[in-house]
Amino acid sequence: QVQLVESGGGLVQPGGSLRLSCAASGRIFSFNYMGWYRQVLGKQRELVAVVTSGGVINYEDNVKGRFTISRDTAKNTVYLQMNSLKPEDTAVYYCNLRQNAGRDVYWGQGTQVTVSS
Image 1 (cartoon, rainbow, N blue to C red):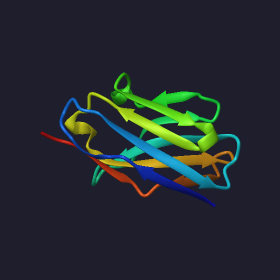
Image 2 (image 1 turned 45 degrees about the vertical axis):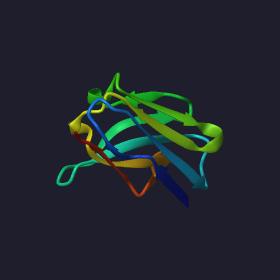
Image 3 (image 1 turned 45 degrees about the horizontal axis):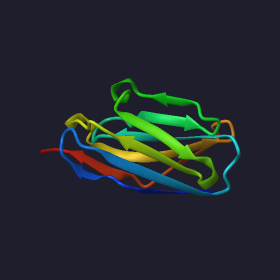
Image 4 (image 1 turned 90 degrees about the vertical axis):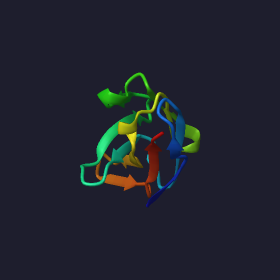
């Protein structure tokens, strides 16, 4: 079993920045994907960014150039630096870990990000 503990999030004005962190613990395989999804009430959860244990990164188009995902493999921790935040970035952000060829999928508890003046 794997546990994901998120931190960060909160209220920020448009144009501001926030940093999310997610620490994974438990039975973690050497090859995995860690990433961030977000969900607005009434809508589907969508991918924001993902990074593999080998360092391959993928971003959702709307966050490219504004968000940066990184990971500390030794600490099994993934970060999401969010800059130039917009009101449409407001959502609950969830940490995600996938391993074992996608058969094992784990989610964090979610952290609220609100971008508003």
